[in-house]
Length: 230
Image 1: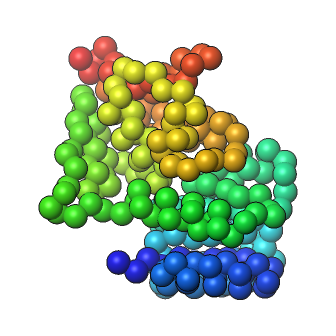
Image 2 (image 1 turned 30 degrees about the vertical axis):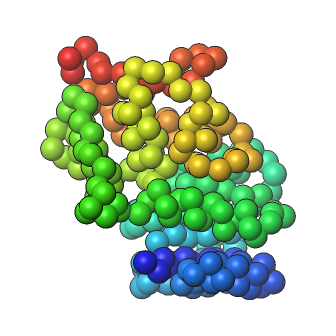
């Protein structure tokens, strides 16, 4: 399967470098140098993953991410030249699945793209993993769908992967480092606040269900079945 990757970056040298490295790995690469063109290409080509620069002319990366999250469920890796933690947190809150701070090695980006797409890919019929059900929550890894009392809820890529991992370790405490290793699947250079942000979003989306993401202070997180769900 040839995956489509859209790179939205206004620094032409970096854009061409990323385009070359991704194409060399077999991806079909689309490029844009501003937010407006990036949105147009995303809507027309429906890429499997978007690499999105934060500082773009016209519509910045924050706004592009916000708009895309209303329209598509595609994974987004955000690029930023800023080192402030608040920018990264805001990006994650708006819907980015991952981020890289410039300068970075293009091979690191390719590794992250590969890891995210591998986890987002539907399983083949011959080796389809089993559906998980705990209480009123049903998770289908093959279709990457989650339903609560029969109603589908929308989870971003990493939220889905976190829920899958937690359901496979029900009532077990998993540390942030363990979650980074199992869900992100590579040596993650960001802070564990990344996990916290995604967990907060996941907890909000599970509100009203029989499952609750419990914070175990100083240890990590665990998924529990509420009294109402037992």
